[in-house]
Image (cartoon, rainbow, N blue to C red; front, side, top):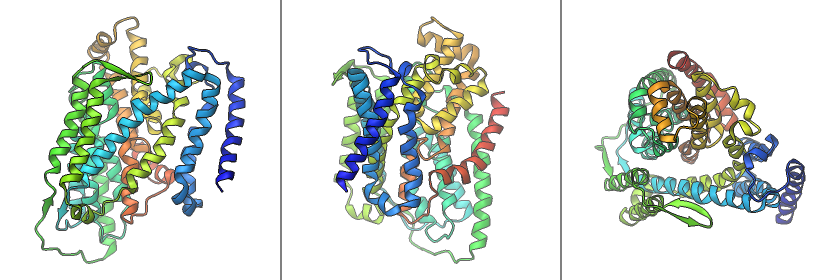
Length: 475
């Protein structure tokens, strides 16, 4: 079996490598995004299709071999890139893992660990009103503790409150819509693209002031729709709700200190500049290294100080974070070609697409659609730079950003809203989406497949809401 797998990797890599060699010759300082053809994104599509199809057609194989599938697609990208582009490709690979993947996993691991140490003793009754209030509360706090922090804090109490309910899939989907994505629109703490904008000079409260009406519109519609759907199924189930007279009590409350520490570390890394160091040729801000170490310490302290009985009561296991780590290790590698092409702007294979983005509504949908499938942080930055170059070419970045806000604020609002809101369109649109899906499946909730999520929920529910958002705010 292992030999067949290795042979398959070698054969696929050879085919992909041969095609890539036709595309360009290696140069020492080549700009990958300007040289890579659009079909170099095929492995990225391949890993997404694997995530979508294998759990349906070969669930047993997927459960035992998904790390190998992830590695398969990663190697298909790595071997030809390194062969053709040599040191440039090695630098890009090191950069995406050292600067992006490792901090990404550290943040998820620390939040997952800390949140798993808090247990709400007693049973919330999962009525339509209680469920809607829980979703509303999570949406409100997501901009201040991050969408990942809010999701990890609330997903287990939400699942337990509805453990007796027969129809639960839509409940988790709306949880992903609201808490994992839409709720993070108000501050740089809420979602990575807004934090990236903050690092580049966008004022901290810019989205709080400008996008609050966007949050109100989207959250009101989705919360109202959820209440109606939940009320319908609640009446349809005709089951007696469990009565638990135990007074609600949050155990492991000290973990809130560690959660605050993680949020503070993220804010620290964006506001304090201590110079940078080079790790295998990849420049990292010292403040970001301090942030990552501090978040690991917060997670370890949570493990050390929280009785394991609390985690056991929380049905805590390491499987969800392991699944995310393995799959996103492959996803990050296969994202190198599409992100490089996107960063190349009008000089890359998607230049025709970026050139066609002109109006605020275009920026909203272009940023949103690409953020649904790619890392929304570089997508945000790409279209921010597109807007700056189009309106304020030649002006220093921070000065240009302030001019953009003063004169054409609607463009930055559209980019910000698209990057955050449309992360809800797919499981990989934002970091906590996949994690919540994994936790829910472990709790026995039958979650839709990758494409099932899009076809059954994103297209009929989210897209009409986003179309309305476009006409109200960006036309």
